[in-house]
Image (cartoon, rainbow over all chains, first blue to last red; front, side):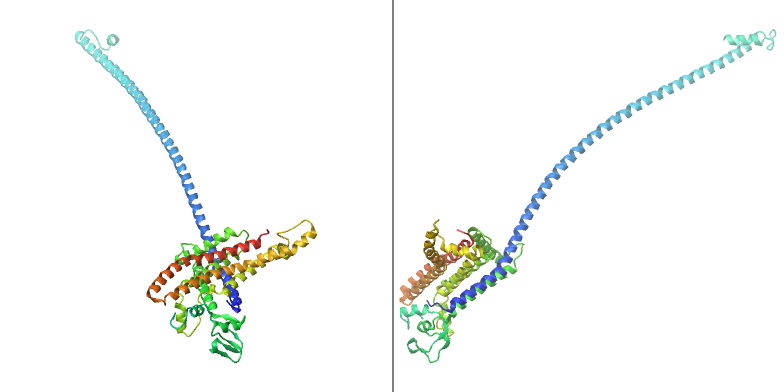
Length: 156
Length: 298
């Protein structure tokens, strides 16, 4: 139970230990703890931000998809309309062309008919002349009665 | 060594004697075993010689074990601090961080001001006292017997059973209390706290009469802080050590008593684990509270 110099020795030892703990133990470990705490907090914040962004992106993707669907249906509608137009146009073109061809054919037929009629007339005239010639061989001079022949031919 | 050549009281006294190195005046000590013709610094051969040295002596065993344990504590924690990473902590770092967070929480709970000294101080107090108390769990005869082989006759291995160690720390804390009291409140504030309460009066003359009364009360309460800190720890550890020694005496009293003593020692050691931790914690908590009081006006 003697109090002696040990007291002073213990006091000094205590002071040195406290100083050492403060300088070399407490500060670095608390620093590391603090830094880790900050790191974890940052990580959590980043995670939350990421999730938020993901949600936004999802929303945006939905919007884009919706727009795209709308556009696609527009395009489809337009295409159908255009197709109907094209079909209509083709039909009307075909009708016009058909009529044209029909008209041409008709006029050709008319021409042919006219020509045939002309030829027939000439042939008949010639035939009439030939017949008349045969009948009137001696009495009728072809050159003198040309006008009669012509009038005959015209009457056919 | 128990029992064969020593009586029980000699055995106990032997266990309670420190290894003392001090300035021994000339004289005849220890029943003629240590005759000093010329005063000087030497080891004390018995407690009588140690007493004769007075204040000019040092307990080598207390100093050795406390410094060894303190260095062990600092070494382990320094290693943890050097390896401290902000990433995934390893085993040692986990352990150190666990203790440090525990201390940090205690300090945050009881200390309301801001002072970077208090937390490391608390850590040092808690771990150091815990380690010194832990030496109590080493069976009482093991280390003294080993040192006997080395030719050292006295060895008290639990530094906290030496009042010098507990008072050393308590006085360190007390100096800090006074230092911060004066620094935070000023000399006037500190003196005022000692003299102007708990009794005060609006009448200046009556107030002056209250000053000595207040001073006596407050001074006693101020001085009781380090004394209670030191004596509480010392008393608990000394009593615990004494019970271990008494149990150890039973080993020399036959097989049955020896076995009974073994059971008792185990039981007391398990109970003592609680005491050594609790005492370290109490010392630390009271230190924090006293420093908090030094920082606050009341």
